[in-house]
Image (tube, rainbow, N blue to C red):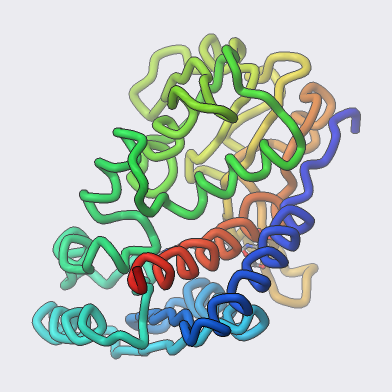
Length: 293
Ligand SMILES: Nc1nc(=O)c2c([nH]1)NC[C@@H]1CN(c3ccc(C(=O)N[C@@H](CCC(=O)O)C(=O)O)cc3)C=[N+]21
């Protein structure tokens, strides 16, 4: 192990600390930030995340409510619930936990949430604002990665940052944050995906390599430039009967190999994951401020 560990838990803690103070200040102005989390069905991983979101809100003094719906809820019923939340002043943020059951159209739901309450940053208006470097909500996971890099004073200026994965939730917004003409960004940014030819040739030129491939241990040591900074966004539950939960979490990077080659790396768990929830809290407080201007 040569690489420095980028501890997302520490960064998340510092972010939560400042959110907590902001919440206290808002309450003095009679503004009580509120978050609505909509959970459809019983996916065990989703339930864990949603519970963590509720618990974090509570710790920071943010009002939150989880609306749990049966897995066979219709699009029409869900639309009605979104409309109600859109108009409920108690909730400044609305989050619909993904993935959704097949009968539901995630895109329709994302479009339906008022952009002002879209604390996930998935609405096309917020996606546009991100690309244009306008004020708006940015997706929590890539925003959290930018925060980790800032915290550890890892400069992106003029560096080659390579993103593996082109999802709407991580890959695409990440790419757009990296190249922005602004402080703490200014990278040369490249995105790789399943159709990329000779991916290793590209990832080996990365000074900062961000992996959101959705495939356990997809990036191996030979794909990493010596001294690179590696950010692992993977969150894969792999069966492991030797643990009490019956599974363990593994990232999209082969950690043992990567940590011998990289200069710094995020672990899984304890890396990017904790930042996702911390940035959701940031966005919720921002939503409360916006809606009270
Ligand atoms: N509308 C929507 N917004 C989301 O932000 C959203 C979503 N849907 N669906 C699922 C993904 C995933 N996600 C995570 C949150 C926290 C951890 C996290 O705290 N991870 C811990 C470990 C947690 C564990 O032990 O399972 C860690 O990496 O240390 C991970 C992943 C938010 N997501």
